[in-house]
Image (cartoon, rainbow, N blue to C red):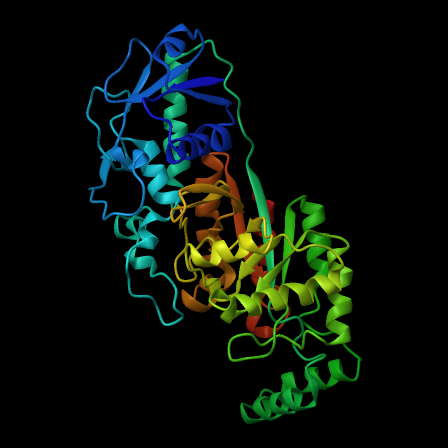
Length: 432
């Protein structure tokens, strides 16, 4: 246990310190604003104030953790022995940057509260972020800071038995198109036949026909294979199911389709699951509630995990809505157009609501890679994609973090357009 002194204990301060010490470094932590109690403590201790009290580990503070509300925070990113850092506090401090204030700035998504222009899907522009503008998006910077702090603490307190966390991998599967041909109805399949014929895709015409007469299995129906593979690799896997009406952006089979309901029931009995909320739920709370109730009526249990389709996330509004509707784990924290760590970390964290200045019960699980981004946006070959994935995995492994990926059952199918992507997925699972 490490004791932290500050002249004032604020919700921001306790939140940031707990993220670094408890959730990343796996250390117990206590806080005090009483100088005599701090001086009397004979274990590891850290002061977070303007001047050191004695011979303790001292970090000079930045004002951000003592403030309330949002302001335009100005700073420059510097190099700290090869690591980007900001909020410089001078050489008197044991570390020259206030990594606790910087952690709060990144993980609270402070900059996403600023007035801004969004992209065509009404999402926060990754290019507006500090991480992209300063070239550290593909590094879990907060975790790197935490481990550098740990090295210094080990030098200061060599006899303390510091714990060590283990690297984890979580595979998440988005099911926003459950079947390629089955259960799509007469009109959608007829349109599909016409489209394939027009583009001279005769193999697809034949395959669609064979699937519809039940002679062949639907190519997107690869759920058993994914489940068995991840069980063999001992990688935790979560399936996220879309359960909305058909529209321009959400093109799954009908939520009322019996075959789809049976598929959902067969999967959730064997693996963890969550709900993929549809495109318009980001700003339509009644629609989100309706979809959640509809899904819970099928799975016959509460839905506590969620993700937003198209990664449409408006902070804090989306998270506030999810909290109000009993979601406890959220998996949208990442960019649809950029690989890397949107919140600067590869460790789960609790959402801090800057509107109310409180840590909420919503636990956020940040992802750093998606198959659609690699294949469709960056247009990488399977081999190129695997190389990018391995680079990100290595960054997470260095800090014993949690590597979270998004793949789609459709891209893992054996259709010609997805050739070799299942191999990329399996190789990613092998890297442990």
